[in-house]
Image (tube, rainbow over all chains, first blue to last red; front, top):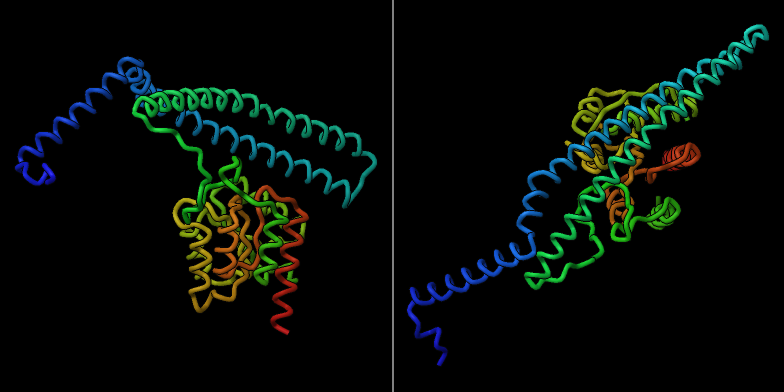
Length: 182
Length: 131
């Protein structure tokens, strides 16, 4: 006979509670022994909010740089437009100098890449550190981290970059659409 | 292709709206309006006068896919050509957009030539189906 069937409900609860308490203690012990409690506390309290703030700043910097470049493109096009529509030899030197100046400013506007690159590199280091801490925690709990292809969940996810994203090229998209009669 | 037609550009990034607007100007389309997601695009569409929609997919508020569904479900708007210009590039997503009646699909980043090619193709097909 199954002994569980003969155990009163309160006893079963007591056994369950004891089991959960033991798991909890073991987890806390591993956390402490691996100094994961400190690492995860720092990650959650400091590094993740910090990373989010840094990435928001990257969005601002890239947006500003793109607008600055587009402004300069507009200005340069106004000058080339004049050159095309009503070329005036007397103004040619002045106009070419102006276009050169605008091109130099465009080059300068690309310096955002250095700044955002540094910020992103720092966030990447932090993400890897978090991954490392979580991996250690999972291993201590006897769970194997899994690398699985991402299935489409019906939501938009932005550009396909990693092998898990499984994005297709424009040519593939064209083939797919012509197969669907588009 | 009527160069005076009014084109609605829907994208949450103002830089991308600007880039699309510039490319359209190069193609001779100067009559454009902008919206930053589906929710702001719908009232513009309902007000009337829009001939063509170019929309991103991934936007806060209403996505481009939901905007497409809204357009196709609206008696007054359902025939409007919709070109999706998006970074979303999963096969399932392209199929989903096609099944919901998208007229063209461009994956970001894209070139001026791709935009021209897809717009030409959409108008070719519209003319064929009208003939």
